[in-house]
Image 1: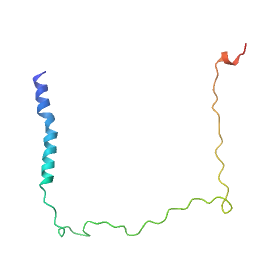
Image 2: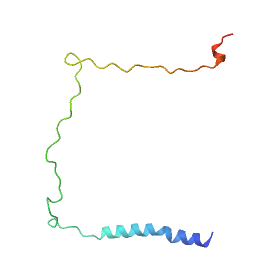
Image 3: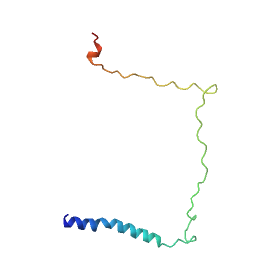
Image 4: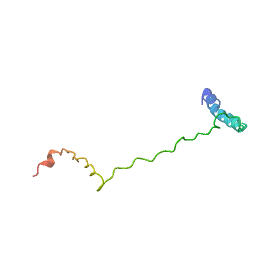
Length: 88
């Protein structure tokens, strides 16, 4: 193994691991915020109005029109080889 490869593997690739450990340590040692220090509405968001009902589906049967017809179906044309077309 080359010397530079060893240095790269042992030093440079450990930087993200050290950064992650530092972030976790920093988060654990944080003090919780006081509830009165936040301004405004206290950080809570509420909807002004409730959502309305969803639109109704179209009615079928005696009170509604007939359902729309299904789309026309088409068959794919397959070219058969010439030997299958001719019968002996």
